Amino acid sequence: MLIARTPGQVREAVAGFARPLGLVPTMGALHAGHLALVRRAREECRTVAASIFVNPLQFGPGEDYDRYPRAFEGDVAALREAGVDLVYAPDAATMYPPGFGAAVDPGPLGERFEGALRPGHFRGVATVCVKLFATVSPDRVYFGAKDAQQVAVLARIIADLNLPVELAVCPTVREPDGLALSSRNVYLDAEQRAAAPSIHRALEVIVAAVRDGETDRERAVARGRAELAPQLREAYLDIVDPATFAAPRDIRPPALAIASAWAGETRLIDNEPIVAVPSGRDEAPVLHDSGRSA
Amino acid sequence: MLIARTPGQVREAVAGFARPLGLVPTMGALHAGHLALVRRAREECRTVAASIFVNPLQFGPGEDYDRYPRAFEGDVAALREAGVDLVYAPDAATMYPPGFGAAVDPGPLGERFEGALRPGHFRGVATVCVKLFATVSPDRVYFGAKDAQQVAVLARIIADLNLPVELAVCPTVREPDGLALSSRNVYLDAEQRAAAPSIHRALEVIVAAVRDGETDRERAVARGRAELAPQLREAYLDIVDPATFAAPRDIRPPALAIASAWAGETRLIDNEPIVAVPSGRDEAPVLHDSGRSA
Image (cartoon, rainbow over all chains, first blue to last red):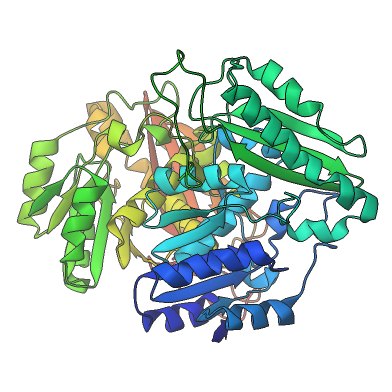
């Protein structure tokens, strides 16, 4: 496994790689969700690259950039074990040298929900991803469904900028009690950890409410809200179009239930597809797989 | 010569092309300046593509998008005659389909001079160029030095987004009286046409003033201003850093004299490199070629 620190080293390595080439972009602090992305890339591609870069552009002022978990040696060992061929791990000065000024803006989608809570976040995500894609030139890139709005932003910029890459979205990996894996879960204390699975239960309640006939978005969301543990503080809970993150009053397929809640200083996110909309509103139930936003 | 109307048609054609592949992006209404870009691409590349697309994103409200000269049949004939292998000529709905939302922002450079006069202009230029580069995947792209700030914007986004393409900048082509060729010159009436070469003379006066020892930017610019024909109205006249378009008070190499003036409803632009800065301020005169911003 090669470790590249600069775009030039990446390009030199990639020139000799067999295609298709899969890329798994990460911020490190790898968990089983990341490794599921690598596994799928390994199954589908002749060569697999992963990037490790904690991207300062996608953190706002006062966010956890400085304390975001970093575990480079362990990450590299896990990627080697998983059969990755190339790790691209630039430092911030290589990614954003003096004079750097350009940005990729995903548009209105990037201002909603996560974008409203984290101004500039998706601009940072879009910018670093365009840079990574242009540097590594993958045929296919792998992202987790847990970050549903990130997936929507990537689908948007790939389509809008004609980027020659395919987006693969892999199902969210969960703890046995339903909590979505996240590098930020390490921040949780015991009480917060015990409360955190109620985020996923709230989403399941919303999905069930719609399946059972609820057609009004706000009523369905209220049913889920009652499930959130009192130790958590809701950031948002809603039903949106998974491509635009618009939230029309009446639930229409395709639809995605999304949730975010604070556990102390830590904000967690999760989502569940609405797998069926009551009959009579559409001719047939609409089924979604985890690639719904791609 | 192939004519492609969609990204898919372009990709299919390009897959069979010999490398290196050169791309000459244009808005059509081709003149000898464009054809000089094609000629240079033809000399340097095994395959040459040109695009023809009048990009609505780079025109502001009230600008000349609707009346911008269009001459598709003649353009295609000229490109065929010049040995172009592929013309990409999408329509606006192909380039910007419903739901399109992403944009490439070149940063502060894009807000100065042309960017201040045309809000959103360089965002539109950067966005369409990233799309064209991602669609055509050229090894080298060709632009004219006349649009110096556009060249600086492209150099910025290519570097900042790690785009795998080389920027080639070709010298401005001029009429015998010095007027820079522009598709907008067709707008000029006889009196305006007679006044227009004073823009280039103003630039030559500035260059000469600096060569003769003037070190103060405003004094050098004032010398050029006196040369502008009274039928023209100055939009800007200045000496800038060709990479950033910042305008420090003291002239420092590398430096570029830039000019823009209105002839009636038509605004013309031009520029000349400052080829020598008075000795004593730097150890040696600095010589620039037309590729200064690349």
